[in-house]
Length: 537
Image 1 (cartoon, rainbow, N blue to C red):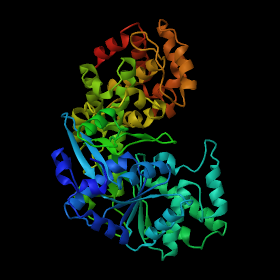
Image 2 (image 1 turned 60 degrees about the vertical axis):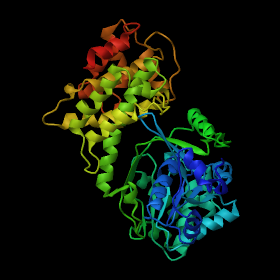
Image 3 (image 1 turned 90 degrees about the vertical axis):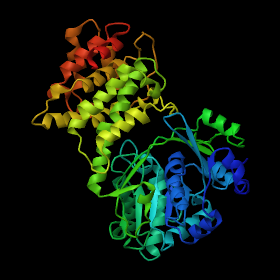
Image 4 (image 1 turned 90 degrees about the horizontal axis):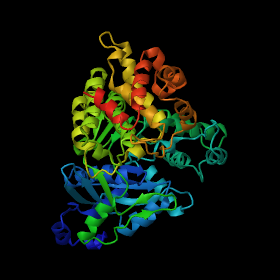
């Protein structure tokens, strides 16, 4: 069996092999989508194929929608050329469940797959036509946080961005320049309304998209390269909106075990492709079963009933609360704790760590005991239930091939938001004290111990990439573990760095505890394990 239109018409063979197939008339769906598009998505990667495309498929199956999605890829053309087009825009979603089962679905909800490149004249013209359509309600994005960045580390505009500022919207080279050019076409077509919806996993994603688009609008108008009024249009919330969203779903790179299952089912041409830009992509996507997408409900041109597919629409304040709940309490802090101690204790899978009673109790304690008392309940997702799903379903999922080494990347950039907000909340509380926190300082001490690049058995390992390694490692490595009295003074430059921890730990009254834990963890082989078991109740 091949993932092609003609082959999928042989429904009996696919269904016998356990595949869920589209229940709608796909040819009609494609025709109507092309005539009256309502949703175009930028970013043709795994998260889109596993989440948004599946939501739309379910709504098509239920007759809630009669049109599907159009996807455009602006970073890696090979995804479209080597995966989408050869398979008639079909893909297979392998949902990896925590109970050990796999749900296999053929996704056919993508009506059209295009390349966002001014050099591809046919696709450029087609995207412009789509943006000029009255029916278009939403353009969404999963292009990673880097996609919205216009400047380099020095704060200077990237060369491609600066070139686009000078040349105008005709043939832009940068990603956001190309998107701004399409929005400008919609402006020229009658200032038609649209929601520009970032669905990337980053804080205040809609604001980041707005800032980038507005910068282009301002520069082009300032230089007289476009018709006046475009920047006003971008800033008119009754015409163009930039909703905040919170997205959460794990979609690892294509896994060999899933590919093997598909081959055993008789599916041909399942091999992943590694593109010239080092993107791992395959005709299938493997993903966890849990998913959340909370969206600020501001759609100037209306929207379809996507809530019937599980998407949650609410106000801006609630989206912000959901994001903080996830990032500061219910998921990300737990992942970071497992990453740090997983590296020290020799684990290579996050899911395996949850079989370790001590590590499981550690993350449960961080979430339930230390985090929940200060988290703001957003209402639409209960924090306790969210943590329940994280610790009982998501992290232990044996199919999720995520590693502590990957999650340990850039830890110095994550600690402030993942733990600092909880410390601040304790400091501001009239009934809680920072001294009540036991496990969060244990994680900080574990991170400092991790920076020694020696595991709990005395074996060296390679630290995951982090921009501050050159600054913090020399401090940690200058310490003689036997000189307890000097530890706090030696560590002070790191412990007092509020950019790392979100607060000055010395001023917050937590530095002493972190140093004591660190000294215990450096006492010799097995000291990390012994310290954890001593304090994790």
